[in-house]
Image 1 (tube, rainbow, N blue to C red):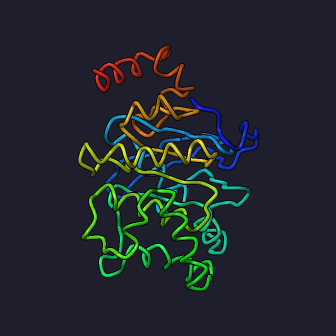
Image 2 (image 1 turned 180 degrees about the horizontal axis):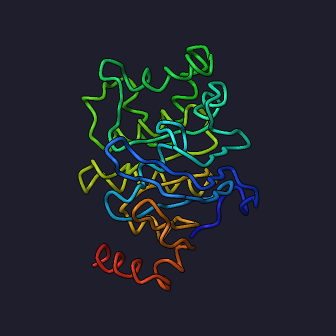
Length: 255
């Protein structure tokens, strides 16, 4: 993995997850006594079979799903019932989903400007300046005045990433951000994510892209049935996994 622009990781945790559990009304337990710590500038890749609780874990990190028990602390702020805390955490934690969720009636520029003006209280000129900087970052400035329907899937997802970055988050969550894309478009989105990783963005990424996990991750978490089966560095995980279940999963996904 390439050395990050912002130097070595701080040893301090930016996210502390302590024994969280989540059971849905249909009786499915998505998270079962789940604990982990994510350090600043760390890239954590979460993998596992379908239904293992990966996406639920991400959605719990910014309060999109309520936990039944346990605690989540993001940059010193408890994710609890306090509305002010929740709002603060959602400002600091950006999320990119499988679907792009862009407003179809608004241009790319306006999609990215909107939250900056509403939440960060920027003027239109201030928001537009950041928007254009971010569009350069994701290599799509020529589409600033286009509407989402005029973009490819890969382009729409890069706009979604720029929109999340416009809030200046301390953490970025990616929930299978490439799974809805055609194969030839996956690379352009992964390249943006690799750039963010190299620049020191704290990232938690649910993905099936094992090449990305090997190249970029500092920590790999393998989940099944709402629990962590194994956790380790990419080198450990892909070349010397301890658990038999991990080895079986890797043999299936890498074959």
